[in-house]
Length: 339
Image (cartoon, rainbow, N blue to C red; front, top):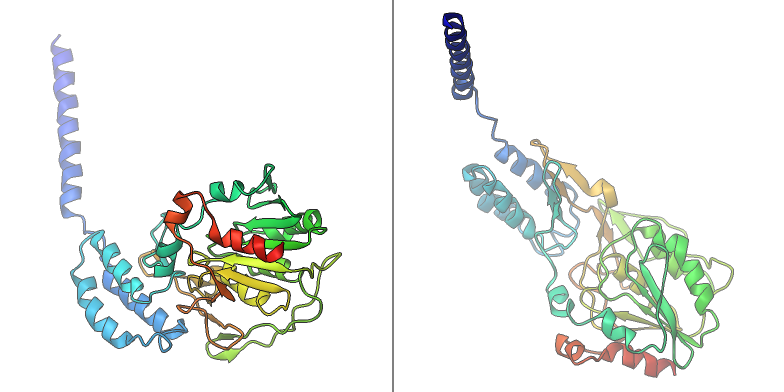
């Protein structure tokens, strides 16, 4: 019994000593180094060095530094993310985002045209105009079918990965005997350049000069687009766009608008032309990352569609109230054009 008590006391003593050592370690350990200022400095310099639209947007980047440097110095803990968010939002660029260590992407800014039109489209309302179920590609990124009157329809929801490169040929094959085609790229954000080319080259009847692009002020030298695929769709085409059409969707629209058989209908797109892809991701000293584009893509009038967007050939305003009433006026207009 005595031995048991003695062992118990000894065990408790060991536990207490261990706890004291652990507490001591916690108390005397140096706090993790605060890299907020270093992160801010690196982010500010990266943007100054590579971002192509500071002048175009008339952003005084030195003044931005004066405002946000003190805020970065004063930020404690996760408060720095709020500073970083507001700082990056000054670029007013829907492509810009920041990422935490192992975290997701946070976009500090969305174009106002996106907010205006984000509920001014509904796939459920669109389906009311068909007398059959719409088809889906294997990736479920393209919805397509033939409307009454032999009018083709394809909603392109995603330009990422190789979805359209792999699947658009079969979509167009199904729709090739239609007398006209509606390409719906409303509600579209970002994607892969290869997918853009996979779409636009199927509508060309001959070579088409590419729109200009610049990196660090140097103009790209690129060959023209060439017709591709087993056949070219040269019958009338209507491209539906709105304020939520963005990035790759805008790029596709701007190229197709140059063709005589294509008409863009709807409203001006969101306005996001800066490029860079995965190479836009820049790692800050703390391990956080920011994505800052560095390629300046231009419309065919030599203006960027950044901020400006791509305007329709025919403007048809559509509101959330129209959708709630079960009407898609932009789609209706396109159908009437192609009848």
